[in-house]
Length: 139
Image 1 (cartoon, rainbow, N blue to C red):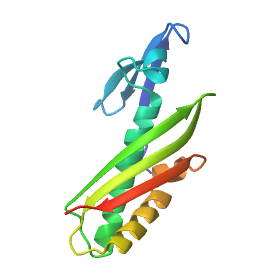
Image 2 (cartoon, rainbow, N blue to C red):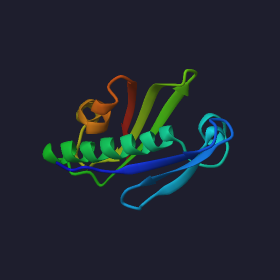
Image 3 (cartoon, rainbow, N blue to C red):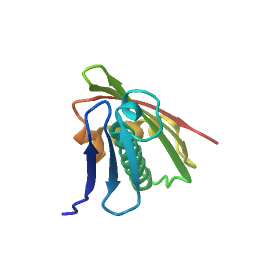
């Protein structure tokens, strides 16, 4: 079994404090604060990192499904928008993907994209959150 690690540190009170989050691989480290999470201040936030993880997982999973179906993709690009509402609660995640996939019909692409949305490991981990998908073929 693969185990991945990430760390977070927070100093101070909720509103005046600040922290850092970093990946165990060392590939990313960033600061976060109340303002970067709930307002528009510089820095990252947990929801942005969840969005990156979800977009990455979904896109890799879709690539695998397409390849297994005989349609190896030239390129896939996915954006995840994580909606944080008062509470705070992650209310929804909107996945939007575009694929350059030679030979596939749109209906088959949409079917496989829906499967990836449902079955990628991050989607499964986030099952309590409404996940919406928009998918389209390009050139």
